Image 1 (cartoon, rainbow, N blue to C red):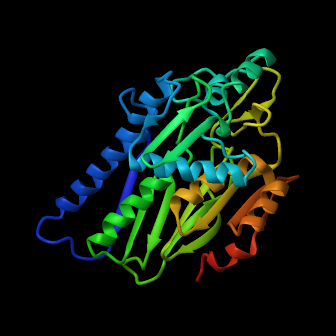
Image 2 (cartoon, rainbow, N blue to C red; image 1 turned 45 degrees about the horizontal axis):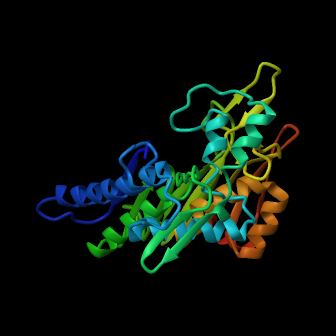
Length: 309
């Protein structure tokens, strides 16, 4: 999926410790073969290239992620939209693009005709999808990594591990404690481009965390205007609000992943309203003159820690 993974476990790995690593890798390889947009032979890429107007059978794994993506899209009024890929590509932020540019209005309008989660129909029995627009494409990069974290956590649970930390592309799940016997601790980064500083620290114990931000992936146009990689499906343009990053904690890494993206699109005001309405544990870092301010939903407060505790 164009990213890295890391798994830390506390406890004995048995006589052949490589067996666990092999099972993890096999699980990830399977998911990549289903949902990667970096592979032309993945199930998702084949679906995207299909111009079939009828129902297209999909695997149970792809169906589960598509259903969750659709549900969060509906709840967020389209702020999260797995079909936004044509707009992401148009602005130069897609997997095959390396030239950032400000596209003309006509190109944005044309790409928006190929975007919209309601144009993707999903059927559960048997699992299948149907595209209302033949060239509709789906990009699960904002939810599939979280799903992969959940799947690897399930592997570790089945192997009897009760203390572990799983990380895939920045999405994490922590269970139990680390070697020191304290909950796994994760830093929320201060959203400064070109620097690595801790802004806040959270404890993870049997929960997942995902962060979305626009401070690493952006470009500056010739006129000095900065454009974030976070595209608002409603406007077809990068977001312009003051939200620098948002971190979400939840039982499911998949849902935390998608909700973090939705909140990043919505911004600090509408995003906070959405998080409160949906019961999302969210921590917003907002730009202001001279620095940042933060805003957390009540559900997030139990996870905040301090560096010296």
